[in-house]
Image (cartoon, rainbow, N blue to C red; front, side, top):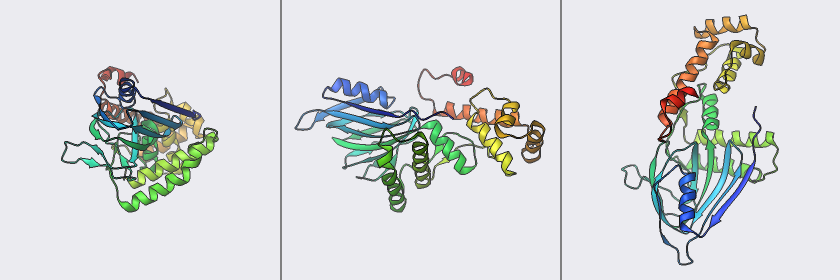
Length: 286
Protein backbone atom coordinates (compact mmCIF):
# COMPACT_ATOMS: atom_id res chain seq x y z
CA UNK A 1 0.00 0.00 0.00
CA UNK A 2 1.35 3.45 -0.88
CA UNK A 3 2.19 5.62 2.10
CA UNK A 4 0.26 8.90 2.40
CA UNK A 5 2.39 11.88 1.39
CA UNK A 6 1.71 14.66 3.93
CA UNK A 7 1.72 18.23 2.61
CA UNK A 8 1.15 21.72 3.96
CA UNK A 9 0.71 24.56 1.48
CA UNK A 10 -0.08 28.24 1.92
CA UNK A 11 -0.64 30.37 -1.18
CA UNK A 12 -1.61 34.04 -0.88
CA UNK A 13 -1.18 37.44 -2.45
CA UNK A 14 -2.75 40.72 -3.57
CA UNK A 15 -2.37 40.44 -7.34
CA UNK A 16 -5.62 39.71 -9.23
CA UNK A 17 -3.97 38.06 -12.23
CA UNK A 18 -1.95 35.72 -10.00
CA UNK A 19 -5.12 34.79 -8.10
CA UNK A 20 -7.03 34.02 -11.30
CA UNK A 21 -4.19 31.86 -12.66
CA UNK A 22 -3.92 29.99 -9.37
CA UNK A 23 -7.64 29.32 -8.95
CA UNK A 24 -8.08 28.32 -12.59
CA UNK A 25 -5.42 25.67 -12.05
CA UNK A 26 -7.00 24.49 -8.77
CA UNK A 27 -10.49 24.32 -10.27
CA UNK A 28 -9.56 22.93 -13.72
CA UNK A 29 -11.02 26.06 -15.29
CA UNK A 30 -10.22 28.58 -18.01
CA UNK A 31 -13.13 30.84 -17.18
CA UNK A 32 -12.77 32.50 -13.77
CA UNK A 33 -13.20 36.23 -13.23
CA UNK A 34 -12.61 38.62 -10.31
CA UNK A 35 -14.71 41.74 -9.85
CA UNK A 36 -15.03 44.42 -7.20
CA UNK A 37 -12.77 44.08 -4.17
CA UNK A 38 -13.64 44.93 -0.57
CA UNK A 39 -12.91 48.36 0.94
CA UNK A 40 -9.60 47.07 2.29
CA UNK A 41 -8.48 46.11 -1.23
CA UNK A 42 -8.01 42.81 -3.00
CA UNK A 43 -6.34 39.84 -1.35
CA UNK A 44 -6.56 36.07 -1.51
CA UNK A 45 -5.35 33.08 0.47
CA UNK A 46 -5.53 29.33 -0.12
CA UNK A 47 -4.25 26.93 2.53
CA UNK A 48 -4.04 23.12 2.43
CA UNK A 49 -3.04 20.39 4.85
CA UNK A 50 -3.33 16.66 4.16
CA UNK A 51 -2.06 13.93 1.87
CA UNK A 52 -2.67 12.41 -1.54
CA UNK A 53 -6.06 10.97 -0.43
CA UNK A 54 -7.62 13.86 1.49
CA UNK A 55 -6.79 17.55 1.85
CA UNK A 56 -8.35 19.95 4.34
CA UNK A 57 -8.22 23.60 3.33
CA UNK A 58 -9.45 27.17 3.50
CA UNK A 59 -9.95 29.61 0.63
CA UNK A 60 -10.54 33.34 1.21
CA UNK A 61 -11.02 35.90 -1.57
CA UNK A 62 -11.69 39.56 -0.80
CA UNK A 63 -13.62 40.26 -4.01
CA UNK A 64 -16.60 39.12 -6.02
CA UNK A 65 -15.90 36.37 -8.55
CA UNK A 66 -17.70 34.21 -11.06
CA UNK A 67 -17.01 31.64 -13.74
CA UNK A 68 -16.91 27.90 -14.38
CA UNK A 69 -15.41 25.19 -12.19
CA UNK A 70 -14.38 21.80 -13.58
CA UNK A 71 -14.50 18.54 -11.68
CA UNK A 72 -10.80 17.84 -12.11
CA UNK A 73 -9.39 14.93 -10.11
CA UNK A 74 -11.21 15.61 -6.86
CA UNK A 75 -14.57 15.49 -5.15
CA UNK A 76 -15.00 18.61 -3.00
CA UNK A 77 -17.00 19.00 0.21
CA UNK A 78 -17.25 22.70 1.08
CA UNK A 79 -18.95 25.08 3.49
CA UNK A 80 -18.89 28.88 3.56
CA UNK A 81 -18.63 31.08 6.66
CA UNK A 82 -21.09 33.66 5.30
CA UNK A 83 -23.83 33.85 2.64
CA UNK A 84 -23.09 34.89 -0.92
CA UNK A 85 -21.84 31.82 -2.79
CA UNK A 86 -24.15 30.26 -5.39
CA UNK A 87 -23.45 27.13 -7.42
CA UNK A 88 -25.13 27.01 -10.85
CA UNK A 89 -26.67 30.49 -10.33
CA UNK A 90 -28.44 30.48 -13.71
CA UNK A 91 -29.83 26.98 -13.26
CA UNK A 92 -33.24 25.89 -12.04
CA UNK A 93 -31.37 23.79 -9.47
CA UNK A 94 -29.12 26.60 -8.19
CA UNK A 95 -27.56 25.89 -4.79
CA UNK A 96 -27.20 28.73 -2.29
CA UNK A 97 -24.42 27.85 0.12
CA UNK A 98 -25.88 28.64 3.54
CA UNK A 99 -23.27 29.51 6.19
CA UNK A 100 -21.66 26.42 7.77
CA UNK A 101 -23.86 24.05 5.72
CA UNK A 102 -21.67 21.52 3.83
CA UNK A 103 -22.30 21.08 0.11
CA UNK A 104 -20.76 18.57 -2.30
CA UNK A 105 -19.66 20.19 -5.54
CA UNK A 106 -21.47 18.63 -8.53
CA UNK A 107 -19.57 15.82 -10.28
CA UNK A 108 -19.45 17.84 -13.53
CA UNK A 109 -18.48 21.29 -14.74
CA UNK A 110 -20.66 23.98 -13.14
CA UNK A 111 -20.85 27.75 -12.83
CA UNK A 112 -20.34 29.70 -9.61
CA UNK A 113 -20.99 33.27 -8.45
CA UNK A 114 -19.59 34.52 -5.14
CA UNK A 115 -19.36 37.61 -2.97
CA UNK A 116 -16.19 38.26 -0.96
CA UNK A 117 -16.07 35.27 1.37
CA UNK A 118 -14.18 32.51 3.10
CA UNK A 119 -14.80 28.87 2.34
CA UNK A 120 -13.58 25.77 4.15
CA UNK A 121 -13.34 22.53 2.21
CA UNK A 122 -12.23 18.91 2.08
CA UNK A 123 -10.81 17.67 -1.23
CA UNK A 124 -11.08 13.92 -1.74
CA UNK A 125 -8.92 12.28 -4.39
CA UNK A 126 -11.31 10.67 -6.88
CA UNK A 127 -9.71 7.23 -6.68
CA UNK A 128 -9.75 7.30 -2.88
CA UNK A 129 -13.40 8.34 -2.42
CA UNK A 130 -14.61 6.05 -5.22
CA UNK A 131 -12.75 3.11 -3.64
CA UNK A 132 -14.24 3.79 -0.19
CA UNK A 133 -17.74 4.13 -1.68
CA UNK A 134 -17.26 0.88 -3.60
CA UNK A 135 -16.22 -0.98 -0.46
CA UNK A 136 -19.22 0.48 1.40
CA UNK A 137 -21.69 -0.70 -1.23
CA UNK A 138 -19.99 -3.94 -2.31
CA UNK A 139 -19.39 -2.58 -5.78
CA UNK A 140 -16.35 -1.54 -7.84
CA UNK A 141 -14.84 1.96 -7.98
CA UNK A 142 -16.71 4.13 -10.49
CA UNK A 143 -17.92 7.70 -10.95
CA UNK A 144 -20.09 8.62 -7.97
CA UNK A 145 -23.74 9.60 -7.85
CA UNK A 146 -24.93 11.80 -4.98
CA UNK A 147 -27.10 14.73 -4.02
CA UNK A 148 -25.23 18.02 -3.53
CA UNK A 149 -27.13 18.98 -0.38
CA UNK A 150 -28.35 16.96 2.58
CA UNK A 151 -30.50 17.14 5.70
CA UNK A 152 -29.83 19.07 8.90
CA UNK A 153 -29.58 15.83 10.85
CA UNK A 154 -27.05 14.36 8.43
CA UNK A 155 -25.07 17.61 8.50
CA UNK A 156 -24.93 17.53 12.30
CA UNK A 157 -23.51 13.99 12.24
CA UNK A 158 -21.01 14.86 9.50
CA UNK A 159 -19.84 18.01 11.26
CA UNK A 160 -19.31 16.05 14.46
CA UNK A 161 -17.04 13.60 12.63
CA UNK A 162 -15.11 16.40 10.92
CA UNK A 163 -14.72 18.29 14.21
CA UNK A 164 -13.33 15.22 15.95
CA UNK A 165 -10.90 14.44 13.12
CA UNK A 166 -9.78 17.97 12.20
CA UNK A 167 -7.29 18.63 15.04
CA UNK A 168 -5.13 15.68 13.95
CA UNK A 169 -5.76 16.03 10.20
CA UNK A 170 -4.40 19.57 10.42
CA UNK A 171 -1.15 18.35 11.99
CA UNK A 172 1.56 17.45 9.48
CA UNK A 173 3.28 15.07 11.89
CA UNK A 174 0.39 12.62 12.34
CA UNK A 175 1.44 9.02 11.69
CA UNK A 176 0.59 7.44 8.33
CA UNK A 177 -1.69 4.85 9.96
CA UNK A 178 -3.58 7.44 11.98
CA UNK A 179 -4.00 9.78 9.01
CA UNK A 180 -5.26 6.89 6.92
CA UNK A 181 -7.78 6.00 9.66
CA UNK A 182 -9.02 9.60 9.91
CA UNK A 183 -9.27 9.93 6.11
CA UNK A 184 -11.47 6.83 6.04
CA UNK A 185 -13.58 8.14 8.92
CA UNK A 186 -14.32 11.43 7.12
CA UNK A 187 -14.91 9.67 3.79
CA UNK A 188 -17.37 7.22 5.38
CA UNK A 189 -19.27 10.06 7.06
CA UNK A 190 -19.46 12.02 3.79
CA UNK A 191 -20.69 8.97 1.87
CA UNK A 192 -23.39 8.43 4.50
CA UNK A 193 -24.48 12.07 4.68
CA UNK A 194 -24.85 12.59 0.93
CA UNK A 195 -25.98 9.05 0.04
CA UNK A 196 -23.05 8.58 -2.30
CA UNK A 197 -23.16 5.48 -4.49
CA UNK A 198 -20.93 4.25 -7.34
CA UNK A 199 -22.54 4.34 -10.78
CA UNK A 200 -21.45 0.78 -11.52
CA UNK A 201 -23.14 -2.39 -12.70
CA UNK A 202 -20.46 -4.72 -11.28
CA UNK A 203 -20.92 -5.99 -7.72
CA UNK A 204 -18.76 -8.00 -5.38
CA UNK A 205 -20.34 -11.45 -5.29
CA UNK A 206 -21.81 -12.99 -2.19
CA UNK A 207 -19.76 -15.97 -1.16
CA UNK A 208 -16.98 -17.06 1.17
CA UNK A 209 -14.87 -14.41 2.84
CA UNK A 210 -11.81 -15.55 0.89
CA UNK A 211 -13.59 -14.80 -2.41
CA UNK A 212 -14.63 -11.32 -1.30
CA UNK A 213 -11.08 -10.64 -0.13
CA UNK A 214 -9.72 -11.72 -3.52
CA UNK A 215 -12.23 -9.54 -5.38
CA UNK A 216 -11.52 -6.52 -3.20
CA UNK A 217 -7.77 -6.98 -3.68
CA UNK A 218 -8.24 -7.18 -7.45
CA UNK A 219 -10.40 -4.04 -7.43
CA UNK A 220 -7.76 -2.14 -5.45
CA UNK A 221 -5.00 -3.22 -7.87
CA UNK A 222 -6.99 -3.24 -11.11
CA UNK A 223 -4.86 -0.51 -12.68
CA UNK A 224 -1.75 -2.67 -12.28
CA UNK A 225 -0.65 -5.49 -14.68
CA UNK A 226 -1.68 -8.27 -12.27
CA UNK A 227 -2.27 -11.94 -13.10
CA UNK A 228 -4.18 -14.75 -11.41
CA UNK A 229 -0.86 -15.87 -9.89
CA UNK A 230 -0.45 -12.42 -8.30
CA UNK A 231 -3.96 -12.69 -6.83
CA UNK A 232 -3.19 -16.13 -5.46
CA UNK A 233 0.03 -14.96 -3.82
CA UNK A 234 -1.47 -11.77 -2.39
CA UNK A 235 -4.52 -13.49 -0.90
CA UNK A 236 -2.94 -16.78 0.12
CA UNK A 237 -5.54 -18.75 -1.86
CA UNK A 238 -4.32 -21.61 -4.02
CA UNK A 239 -4.73 -20.85 -7.72
CA UNK A 240 -6.97 -23.87 -8.29
CA UNK A 241 -9.19 -23.00 -5.31
CA UNK A 242 -9.39 -19.39 -6.46
CA UNK A 243 -10.46 -20.43 -9.94
CA UNK A 244 -13.10 -22.81 -8.57
CA UNK A 245 -14.52 -20.19 -6.17
CA UNK A 246 -14.90 -17.62 -8.95
CA UNK A 247 -16.57 -20.12 -11.28
CA UNK A 248 -18.95 -21.28 -8.55
CA UNK A 249 -20.04 -17.88 -7.26
CA UNK A 250 -19.56 -15.51 -10.21
CA UNK A 251 -19.73 -17.82 -13.24
CA UNK A 252 -16.50 -16.20 -14.45
CA UNK A 253 -12.76 -16.66 -14.11
CA UNK A 254 -10.69 -14.28 -11.96
CA UNK A 255 -9.30 -12.61 -15.09
CA UNK A 256 -12.79 -12.18 -16.59
CA UNK A 257 -13.87 -10.45 -13.37
CA UNK A 258 -10.76 -8.22 -13.53
CA UNK A 259 -11.48 -7.36 -17.18
CA UNK A 260 -15.02 -6.34 -16.24
CA UNK A 261 -13.71 -4.11 -13.46
CA UNK A 262 -11.25 -2.44 -15.84
CA UNK A 263 -13.91 -1.86 -18.51
CA UNK A 264 -16.25 -0.21 -16.02
CA UNK A 265 -13.42 1.95 -14.72
CA UNK A 266 -12.57 3.02 -18.27
CA UNK A 267 -16.19 3.94 -18.90
CA UNK A 268 -16.24 5.96 -15.69
CA UNK A 269 -13.05 7.75 -16.77
CA UNK A 270 -14.62 8.59 -20.13
CA UNK A 271 -17.75 9.96 -18.46
CA UNK A 272 -15.70 11.99 -15.99
CA UNK A 273 -13.26 13.35 -18.57
CA UNK A 274 -13.87 16.95 -19.63
CA UNK A 275 -10.39 18.15 -20.62
CA UNK A 276 -9.51 18.47 -24.29
CA UNK A 277 -6.30 16.46 -23.83
CA UNK A 278 -8.21 13.45 -22.51
CA UNK A 279 -8.77 11.02 -25.35
CA UNK A 280 -10.25 7.59 -25.73
CA UNK A 281 -6.80 6.28 -26.69
CA UNK A 282 -5.17 7.74 -23.57
CA UNK A 283 -7.81 6.26 -21.28
CA UNK A 284 -7.56 2.89 -23.02
CA UNK A 285 -3.78 2.99 -22.59
CA UNK A 286 -4.20 3.71 -18.85
